[in-house]
Length: 124
Image (cartoon, rainbow, N blue to C red):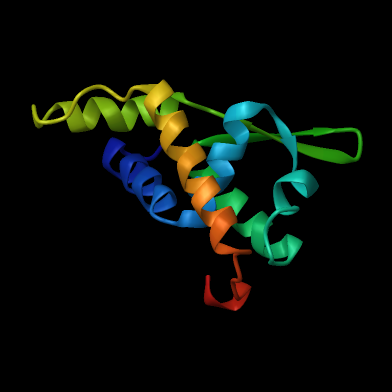
């Protein structure tokens, strides 16, 4: 079993990457197949799968195989754990999931306007 500090480190590390934040924004709408998640990104399916693995290891998403398709689902409880931790400093309000959704949508729109995300999977 991992410690709370290890879980929080994994959450914040996962949230640090703009591609992973964009993926979370997409999953706010509904569960998605891995291939649908990969579609808007100018990177290989393997690179997207690596991002999904990081999000899953942080507990931010879950994956389920339905037939031959792997589906991804947002798991907001991990964000709540991070919010509770930040509240301990007394300077942060609880995570407003509606505000988070608006932020992620804005991030996704800005990334879309900036053009496709190009990433070398060897860099991860």
